[in-house]
Structures are given as structure tokens and as C-alpha cells.
Image (tube, rainbow over all chains, first blue to last red; front, side, top):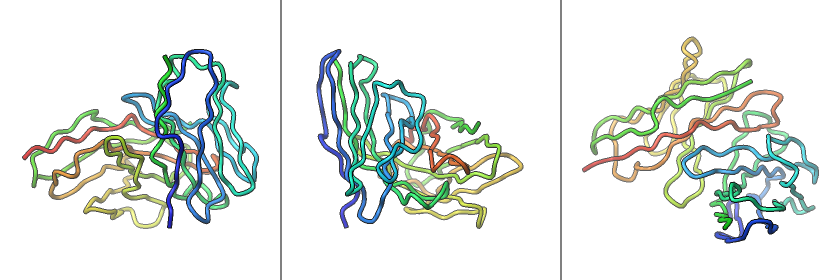
Length: 115
Length: 114
């Protein structure tokens, strides 16, 4: 059973560019959440997608957007990149109806460096 | 609003000695609490979770945690540290109404010395 997969593993961009990160959830999961982990910090919630809709959003600007496809995979898009967007971006999958007790399973992450 | 405080940013132990990683939480509702581990250049792996059943929760690799509502704590312990336990550990809270939004602590880096 494949776990959560993310691509690419590493990415280097320059300020002002746009980036797209991809995530495939664990088999059977229908919900994808995205987190940003800056160096030396705990992950911070960006947003969550369920039934192809953004269900909840953290305290991130509109430059961060996402999408969920019918097969439950998801993309995270970041526009107008800033140096401060350099981080490890983590995708997590879960069951959408499981509620707050549901376990989220994390992928290995995409490390983004903005120069 | 819910939050998590991990009381130690770094913990260093000798192999074979006990491990204690401390976590306090704040939540207006009865929360779910999790401990995740992150090895270098790896994603997050669930160690254990509390969901209002038994207050003493056993996880993988010999770790366990005790939920103490009166102290709003969820400390992680292991009787005997192994070199492979060296990693970053995160205490995490999730509360009703948040669509399973996870709030992470800042992390505790565990070093294990021979």
C-alpha cells in the first residue's frame, strides 16, 4: 500500500516566480491538508481540501492556492514567491468524515528554496 | 483557541536511559492529542494519539504518553532510549469544529549519546 507521495522532492526558484507542488494521498483517503514547515519550526497549517473544495484555511495570504482533483490528488500553488516562502512543504492525507480525531498521514515533503 | 507548548527545545540522554519529552496544551474543548516524530530529511510519522479513551496511550517503538486533563499535559516517555530515537518530536493538538486542522508545537530535538 503506497503511502502519501509528493513531488518534486526539491525545488529552487527565484523571487517573483510561481511554483506548483503535487501530492497523492494514501490509498482510500479523500482529504488532503497542506502544511508549511520553516527551518527549525513546527509545521503550520495552510489549507485543507475535501470533495475538491477548500474546506478550511490557515493564516496564509492569497498567494497560496490549491486544487484537488477527482482522484483526490492535490496541488499547492504559490505565486509571487518571497524569500520567506523557503520551507519544507508537507502534504497529509486522511478520511474527510473522520473528524478531529482522525489520523493524518504525512508525505516526505517538498523542500523549496527561494533565491 | 488551541495551542501547544513543548517545554524543551532540546533534550539529550544517554542510550539505555529514560526519555521524557514534555508537552502542555491549551484547548477550549476536549482535544485529540498526537505525537509525531521527524527523522532528518524525512516526513512526519505518527507515534501515538489520544482520543478520549484510555488516558495512558501506548505507541510504536516503546513510546507512551499520559493525558492529564488537570495539568493540561501530554508528556511523551520511553523507558530506555535507543540511538535510533534521535530525531525531532512534535506534540500536536486537534479540536472539534476544526475539520481536523492540526496545531503543532515548536518541536523537541532529542539527542541520544552512546
